[in-house]
Image (cartoon, rainbow, N blue to C red; front, side, top):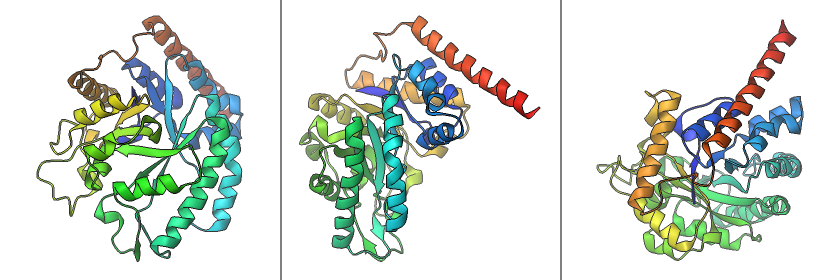
Length: 322
């Protein structure tokens, strides 16, 4: 498994080249990408333009994943329109080495009873997974366990670990798996025993967060996602050890509430995230080095290429608007 940078959950943003540079500077092996930004770039200029920085960094940086760009839980017309665009998006994502696509199973519905909603999920998730499969991309499902996401809704749906695993098993596609979010897994009733019964192939990606000691799980909300080591209810080291025993080799991201790093600069935030993952790695008995096979010269070259290319693009844009 490898340390992956998800900028959104750390509350930071930046150009694609800047995020690549941050990931490389602080020793991450993977990076989640903003597929919507790539779509805009490809439409305004070209696919080559949208992918060039990521392709140049491929030897040093994996693509941890991207969010599914399909509004699939609503009306049929919108879903079909988005689905028709997915093949080209998947092809572009595969060009940069993306192997995981992430979506959230909503915990409640205003209109669909449980069984009707279950069938809708089975059908649409299967269709979307079928589009992703030829490009070597897996569809990872996560869920929302906090009660706030179900309040005021007519029909409850999947908000616990076991029902999500059941849903995954019934989707008619081999490339559908679990996004193991330690916070939702714990709040949603998942335990170490259930995790140990999984196989590595069932897990698409891993997100780590902890819960403060004094929190009532019956009223918990997403703002109470803290970094591992700042809580006390979730043993993230034990989770990593189980994953290692399973042979999981995918991305592991720090995933607290984005406001937790609000007072830090972007560099300090990424540095702190990497330090937290390093501490977990060492506590689990893993090697701290995340890029032992790569040289610093290669990393410096990749960062330099991205910076030069982005700088050239900025100059061209300024000239065009002068």
